[in-house]
Length: 228
Figure 1 (cartoon, one colour):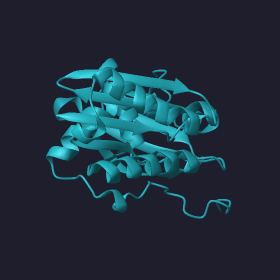
Figure 2 (figure 1 turned 45 degrees about the horizontal axis):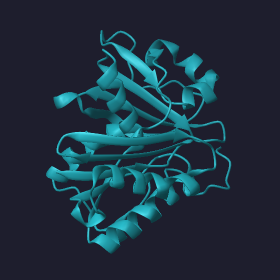
Figure 3 (figure 1 turned 180 degrees about the vertical axis):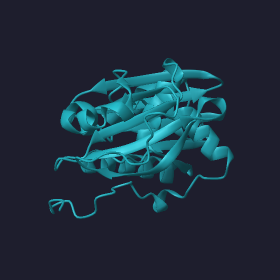
């Protein structure tokens, strides 16, 4: 299987290519540089692989939740590439990509992921280690403020770690949930290489979509409104 993965939902611009079990990646953390970085990164991984876009099976897209502008950048590029090459798009949660990296590098049963949602809120996702170390959601991703995460039990005996920049951005939210989210592992932003296995699973399960049907996971639709 030949797949290209993209994510620009955070401060990181991340691209990865998977062909014949070989992974090629470009990943840079630079604020407000995604429009300059993304297309050259895609060209670079394709050139290194020796492949053309039309040879791919699909494009894996990190759909957020995350930066509104960032999500739109990757979505528009992925749609343009997929439409031109006649490819399907496989939408993947950017929060789940962080959990996938956790399960690849850390000995943890669960990953509690937070990204910066601004307005004193985080985008929250929680995952257990599933079959093949793929993350399985414990509850639906959501906006979360300065309150306890009710779904998590501090005494369930599972090893749990915290990932994502949101915990650094709002340490007070991390503090009131310290007994629930576990120790931080230093994984802050989604990496496209860890979206690949998620994308393969989704593709093989028939969850690819037409490029015109891409909808980023905004979660907050009224950007200008402050939360109550």
